[in-house]
Amino acid sequence: MLREIAERLESLDPDSLTPREALEALYAIQNALENSAASKKLEE
Image 1 (cartoon, helix red, strand yellow):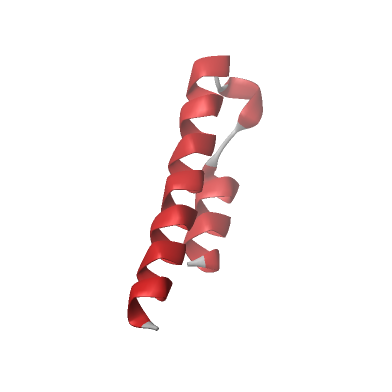
Image 2 (cartoon, one colour):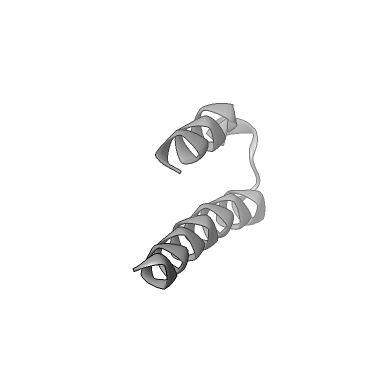
């Protein structure tokens, strides 16, 4: 999961993003983290 997030961050060019695109990218990463945490709880 951390590798996926790192790859997403590395692929972003913050200088070329609009504020809306930057927010969407952050929300997508946040959603991935939440989904990962939720799936870990289900496994326990």
